[in-house]
Image (cartoon, rainbow, N blue to C red; front, side, top):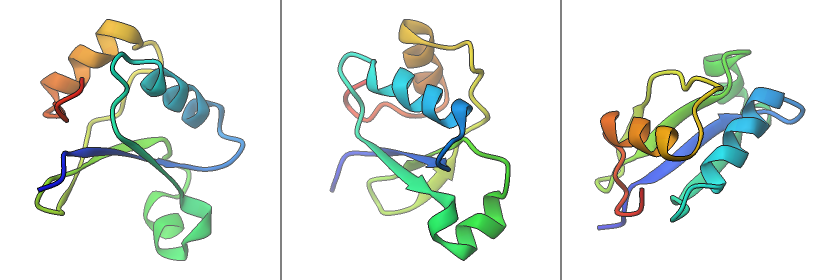
Length: 93
């Protein structure tokens, strides 16, 4: 089975989305991250609208689980701890 992956539902020009992506990519080690632009898919756009950024975990069994909203102030070790507390280990964070 594949390791869990973080999914970031985002949109171009969203400063909160870009900031979260930067903070996730700055973690050591970097978690597996897939960024999905909600504006490229009508179903995603309808589901998430202006609620981005939304972070979810793609589970090893193929399922998805959305995580609670991430504070824009969380970074570094605090963000890594938050991910672990919310069920994302991914083997890397």
